[in-house]
Image 1 (spheres, rainbow, N blue to C red):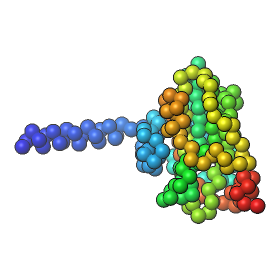
Image 2: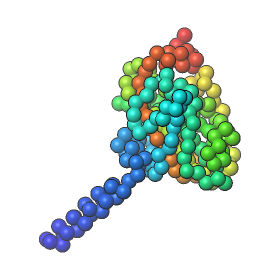
Image 3: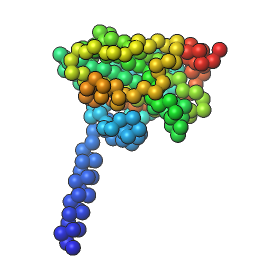
Amino acid sequence: MWHKVKRIVIIFLAVNCASAEDTEAEKLFRELEVVPDILDEPPKELLKIEYDGGLVVGRGEEFTPTQTKDEPKVDWTAEPDAFYTIIMTNPDIPTRQNPATREWLHWLVVNIPGTDLAKGYVLDPYIGPLNPKESGLVRNVFVVFKQLGKQEFDEPILNNTNVAGHERFSSKGFAKKYDMELVAGNIFTSRWDEYVTLLHKQFGIIK
């Protein structure tokens, strides 16, 4: 009996020790349930995301579509000779409770040398949060993957005037297809504001 109790205690301590050793990014992705909603495992590094005016976002905090409407600066620990992919998606469209079109692709840049985003190849230009009013609070998920090297990507080039290609994207599926390794990520939350109406007109969702 004592041996069984001892074994249970050891397992309990091991699990709690592993949990205590999680990085800030790992904890964030688990607490906000991005793991398991769209990823199997969380990133270890917290991606730095900075919008105009020095606005640093992430850690699950709430920011408005107006504040985050323009492409941000991003930074992570990169190997200078390696190539990376950055993805931003919203897994909560139309709502977190009913994510029928999960994930909605907001940004996709591949073949980024180091952290030099300007030299990457844009498959989908940045578009900020545009969830409808009824969505409530949604998660905006950024992930960075390390590529095997500079690669050819058999993907359509999207634009920000047509919803085609943005709906039902899979970050996990994309990474698996090109055999990429998750290295960094971050999340901020948002809800509808008046700026979203302009984006919906831009995409032809409303007239």
